[in-house]
Length: 406
Image (cartoon, rainbow, N blue to C red; front, side, top):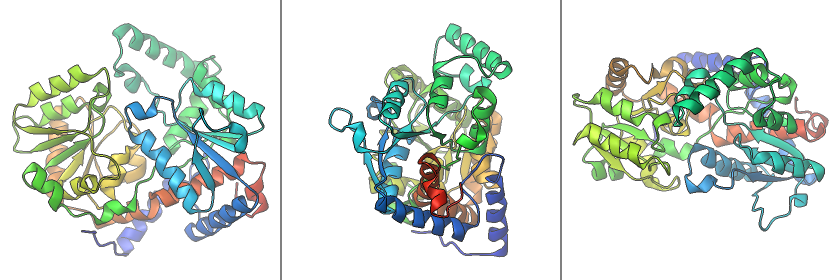
């Protein structure tokens, strides 16, 4: 059932305030909404007329354990096609790069270096959705041996002092034409840590499908024994900190549904999560993104809770926000940049704080203002329009020729 989205002075003021967050020193998605949408639409038609062909690609192993980045890739391609861009997923064993004149890579991965270099040799423009978050806390809590974590933290500290320090990541970021971080904070990390020129960055927000606004809760509620539970969706791994959430809620009356599969290699972590909860939590396997049951899960839950070490901001949070679902999100990452005071924010190692935030969220009920923010500003359509602007910046100023601001 769709939550009603009504315009009010309060909601309009809050939406305007959030738009200002994206008007930082790095070019972003927001401007005058109507003007941006109109110019982006004009560019879509012009791009088709001038033969802009885009190939989109992630890591070779991306679909072995699909998550938010893979959803972002697939949804972006679909939304671009709806706007007249000839956008296709790149199948390197079948498709020649030379078919395209723009290559869009997803994720910061060493393997993209050779791909970007090959594309540039063929004359393609290359853009990269970085999907990265680099701070000391996130590096320390990566699921790696202590020695490697210490080395990563030391290197990070050195990079803060010497941004010109060589690395595959720095080489990749300087090898592409335009970088597409998901937030101003991520953009600022690229500038501060890797000396990326701000003019080569275009902030593109994550998005979600507006169909999540109109789901019915009955199907999933029947599956788990009723509505009003705490939903924790996502890949199960230490960085997502499902164990911390479960321990924080142990002894409360809150029912937790953990929805997702263990990342390959982290099956022992899933087993530890199960042992930590007894009968107070239900574990269900990942639901396909296009399965109506996933939308029903968001509609049926009392709140969505992510106690990760960071999120950017997490596609599941945007999907849940489409129906105004109360959100409990990590302080690490850029969730505040998206949702501001409309969410509850927690530190992943603060069990008492997590418990209080979840209890507050469960008592709130759904928010029409949160739903309005998500539906109007963080749909895949909005993300596609921002992506088209980035393509224009990369492709020899074609957007400027069509009157779209660079």
